Length: 250
Image (cartoon, rainbow, N blue to C red; front, top):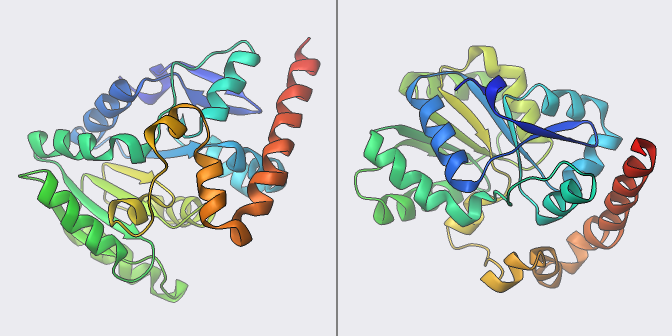
């Protein structure tokens, strides 16, 4: 199935894939196996606020082959707007399952992002949990922009089926978009802070909080000084945009 054939819900000007977690895994594995050269991104409430504030980011996100609902608030918004998404697709919840599928299909991964040592530790943990998984490279995302061409050359040397980029939005999306034509990968997937969870550097919220859409509150308690504006101001901004979108549609 080409990415154009994946049904989408248009939410605040972004087409979000109508996929369950299992369907998402299946689509990405298939795209990587066929070397379809897909760009894959995600949206949550904070990303939608960034779409409204940064035209360049909005254009890059809209040009992606697949954009999925990383946040539960996006799923709720889709229902309120009359274009329901089936469920939240959050990489932290299923990345080990995804890697197990990659191991069965003999697909290769390259991890790029986070602070020094985090991607490497995440790779070690994944290989330990998924026998047969091949991670051909892992390096941090805190590098001088002047080294980008060298990093692209290194990635292309390994020609991974899936390049997983965790630098945070919008830097990760810009970095991939600017070099996408040069990257010899099957799929380039932006994942935000995923490596920090996989490396055991940052704890995840309890499952009940994730299911209740309260993971943001857990993260706010852990890092109030860094995240207070994103959640206490940003969440209300997102809700206002969703409400305004519904009013305009009516």
